[in-house]
Image 1 (cartoon, helix red, strand yellow):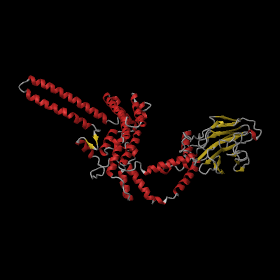
Image 2 (spheres, rainbow, N blue to C red):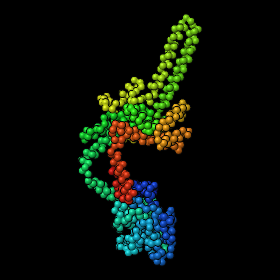
Image 3 (tube, rainbow, N blue to C red):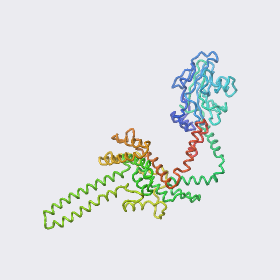
Length: 573
């Protein structure tokens, strides 16, 4: 069925004729999860009586009986019941032909209703009939309701899943409420009774003639009004004070130090954490979201000694993510350490060879052999002694108990970050205020596609030396895996699977390389730091939002249609 609507005429997004069925249903019913509660999309090939024929993708029905008496009536149900999370559900049918007598009915019914009757004649069945315009509510006795309908007319049926009311439309015009207090889990249904009758259904395949979104806007307004009128329990104190505290704790939790400071000045709300500590956490989060996990681990050990030692599972998750970032090329800390060690060894070998050669020359030249021999031995001794020191300087993981192993490392960290509780007028903000999910994105001058290409070129799989360092790091992860629950070991196995492909970015496990994978471990590390400082691991505002979302799911499961218009996302728009 194709509704004749010009592109210039549609007023609501769902009436765009260029939309697909999936796109239109998503606009109309955004909170329906079809993997759990599928929407009706066609008529059922099983839930119908014998005299109903189906065609055109089970959207067209025609009568194929003799149609002598009302006992020859036949109906069909849709494939699925209407989910309560629709809030307001609507479908339309076009009368292709009224047939001999036009004994046709459109409406809703429960799954238990017999299909050898027209809609509305049996219990839990509700229909609007075309031959007389009457409405039928679980009874063979109809009530005057609307006009008759015939060939060419478009009849719609809508159900308000908040109050259980049902209405019909004809050619885009609302005919008023037909039924009230209908039960949940009803199916769209139509029925035919005489030869030649034919109907096409529209469950969203085409734009609706009636602007159902206008009805939804009004229901959304009413629901918001009900929520706003709810009274605040007195036992929780002043509602504005509670909300200010929740907002402040949210800003502190995510390290938005500038915004938290400005919010505190404007509201008088005290900040629950030192600004220096917030900046430290923000710096760690930024490193994680940039994929520099090794540096984040080192900085965490520097600023929060013992945190990762006491939380082995978190350390394991971080190290697994570091392994993935090493493959992608985003994390080079371990690789640079290995390269520095290799260069140091090579330098030592070269110095030793030169020393041996110089000693041979000294033995052949007696006039100054002793002097030169002593000089070369001194140089060799200096170069050899510098090997471990050079390796330590290049290894960002050589930090334990919160102290750096070399003075230069300590100065580098101290010049950028403040210890918790310190104050410094020369200290600068580590990063600008932003959404925590976008911290890394603000540092990227290239597009995501370009960044992926850059990471691909810097992947350690392209370098044998770096690849060997990766394998060594992987073996250390296997040892660490012995200290964590088996539930976490699967993370390492998934990460190791990347090594099975010459080009991991085009493999079936490439999703592990997606930067969004950094977010969960970033949140876990941030929460662990806060909990170590006796702060909530999760801000109350997020807990309240998550609780609200869960309650909305419970509402949907309990067939409370208001869940469609009370979703927390609506109040963010």
